[in-house]
Each structure stands twice: as structure tokens, then as C-alpha cells.
Length: 292
Image (cartoon, rainbow, N blue to C red; front, side, top):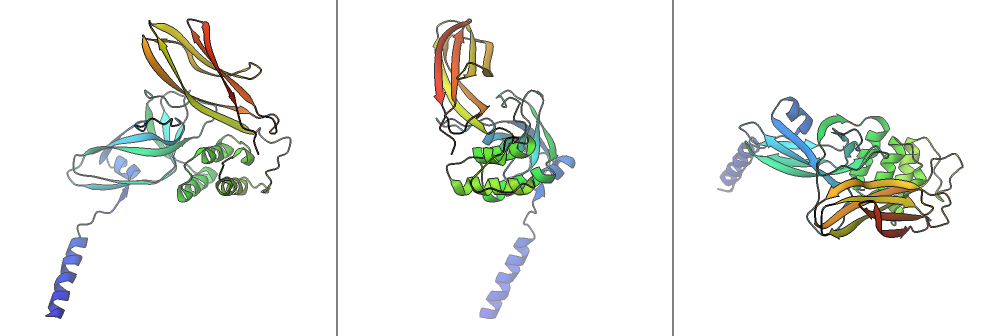
């Protein structure tokens, strides 16, 4: 009796395994026209500020065009190409797996990072197309980021160390184990000696510091709005908003910027200036922490 029961269970398991779906790369499913993909920015629905250029900031909307279920995989390293060339080319930084029933459409949030430090952050209305996969040193780095689950600003700095030739010592994180792991790996990719003390030489790319935040304002009629970031000595860093028309009501704008640090021992300052119809209304001062 026991022998018969064992044989019966084995047959069930073997039969069931025939119906398991093998996962296929999303790129292959697109090539075979099994799916359609729309790419857009993604903003988590909570009250916290989320960066527009790293972390969970992009999403796919994928539709299964077949009459059978699909198991799909998107690996880290896929480029997301902006239709507006003034905006950043994004790169998927975490492998994602998902399933679609026949005819089903689903939105899939993606971890992604910017690969062009000098361009603007993706906007909610930005269009993107499905690009090629990263190669060479960038591919090695994004695989490392994916494996270690370093989906943070330090990893974004590591990406720029490859794509924009930033110094490995511009990589900073309060968790020194994360920071040093990324610095060490980038130094290896760039064939540079790794210095645990983070020493830098004159000719290296300047150390960069970053700010992010939100600015909320209320207006009682339609007005032209400017929101501009300057250095402490009033040099232009970034036009967040430039002569943009806003209707009456309350509005919140997310902003981010970066500046080179001249003397790492002195805290740099940034000024956020808010104008209505060309008139300065308010300003906000950011004193950044001393880099250590």
C-alpha cells in the first residue's frame, strides 16, 4: 500500500512539472511581439520625497499579447532612452521577474539610475523607449549593484564614476561598508589603486555633493514661477522652474541638484530662490554637511 501511494504521488509531481512556465527575457518577448511595453516615470504613493533619478523611479506597463500566460524577466543594465535628449538616460539597476496571464496588462515598478549626470531628471510627462543593455565596465558595475542591493545615492555616484568619469571618492554613504565596497569596486573597474582613507589627487574629477527636497507654495491667481538654485556666492547651479505658468492654488515642486566641493573640510552652501512674475518672494539656504 505504501509503495502504491508513493508511485501515485510521484506521477502527480511529474505531471504537474510539465505545466510550469519557463521565464523568458522581456527583450526576447518584445522581439517576438509577445508583449507591448510602455515606459514612464514612477512615484510611490506615500508622503516621503523620492528621487527622480535613482531608486524606484521608473516603471514598465507590460501587456501580454498572446493567449497563454508568460513568465518574464528584466535584468539589470537595460537602458531606458528619453525622447527628450535634454533628460537623463536611465538604466534598470535591479533584476525584476513578473508573470502575466493571457491578455493581461500590468504596471511594474523598476529600480533605475541616471547615466548622464549633466542632463535633467525625468519628468512625469517624459516619454521613454526600450534601449540596449549596458556593456563593459558599466555592465559589471550594475551587476554588482544588483547583487548587493545597493539601490541608493552612493550607487548612483558609482554609476557616474563610470559614465561621467567622476572620482570613486565622490561615492559617499553613512554606511561605510556600503561606501567602501562601491569605492573599491569602482577603483578596480577604473584600474586605480584603492585608498581606504579616500585620499584624492589634484587632477581627479571634483567631489560632488547633492541635495534633494520639495518646495510648496500657494498663489491666488495664475502667475509665472521661477525656482532657481545658486551657490552660496550666487553662481547659478540649476533652473528648477523657469518662467512656468501655474494656476491659482497650492503646488509642491520636487528639486535636486549637485555641486563640486572645492574644500571638503568646509561645508558648501546652496540657495534656493523662489520668484513670482520675476519678483523674489522667498529663499531657502542649504548648508551641506562636511564631507568626511
